[in-house]
Image 1: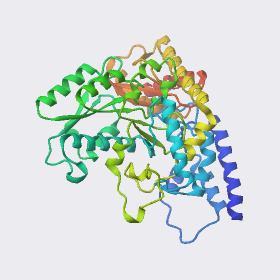
Image 2: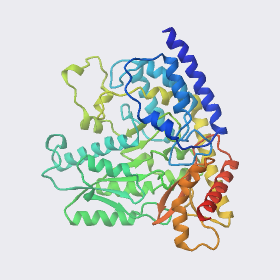
Image 3: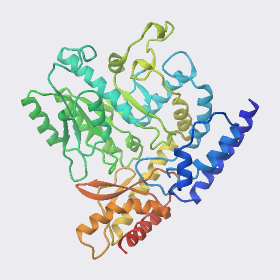
Image 4: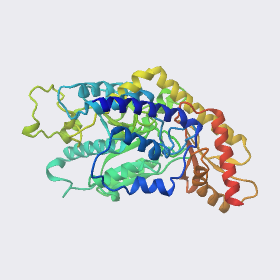
Length: 472
């Protein structure tokens, strides 16, 4: 234990030194061949080494090559910096190393609080037991969709767990053209098939077109296909758009569809009063996915799925073999009865610490600050003569493109496809690209609490500089 104590102190210093140095260094840098070889091709060691030596290797070969999301000028994908509280408690969770499948211990009890706090933050109803932490929104979506599939089977007079999906009529699910890819993966994994996945067009603000949704449902009913599931986005990853949740909830009620909301990234946007009206209807969802490891900054990995009724997921997943029987368990049973995972990590400590450290007011301030910066970036884009804003700013994502003077549309398209990697390699800012309405686009997602307006100016300048290099 003396070695662990000494190495632990060294590790704490290493963490603090790294996080302190991040803002002054490059956002991202390529990994040189020598370090790439060390990272990827180490032989299995025959004998062990002291803990301190491992820290030296991490300092020299791992920490210099981060993804970049700890830097204030990282605007790529939807990846936040780690919350200080989450970093602090991560070793303590590892020291306990429980399985949070169930039982009577701190990890399970704290997860009840962490899940309830997340529901309260976004204003979602939370009956006891109606939610659990997951690895991320991808797993949360699988849990929600499997629960919806089980309910649909019951409504049709059969049990999916017993008979599977055959030989019953197909089940159709509906999602917008801007929906996250994890929904299709979940549909394919659960045997629903992408053939019966309906893509609903979006309007000019990239929100689901509910009239088109109604038409697709009517067509399936006429064809003998059973509509059963519709998902809406509370903050898409492309533009941050929030679908018309209340309208979609009404369609779901009319046709007895399971209504799921993907709030993995954007659900916390409800804390920004300027965006709040757009979230009306979120509380009507049968299930909600959200990721504490996104806007909240809980260290990866940590997602969450919430339900209006805990009976649904328990009916879908509960299986208690004799060796896991717990006669002392309360009426809620074990977390493993509500999802597919039996061994579950102690994610709740990172969630609890992050929320407890910031408080609701601190989280709301973070959301307001980052959404405000996204609107500022949009104003900078619109005031420039060489950038175009491509979508309204609703959350903390700004979608735009670079359009230098005297460049034809084909050249603009090719340039914007090439720009993200070119900007990344310059090292002073990091953003990623996407496609909107079939056109190459740049998108900046702002999640870092230390990002400033000066950082936004650097981003635009770096895009211009990278464009000049590409067209020289």
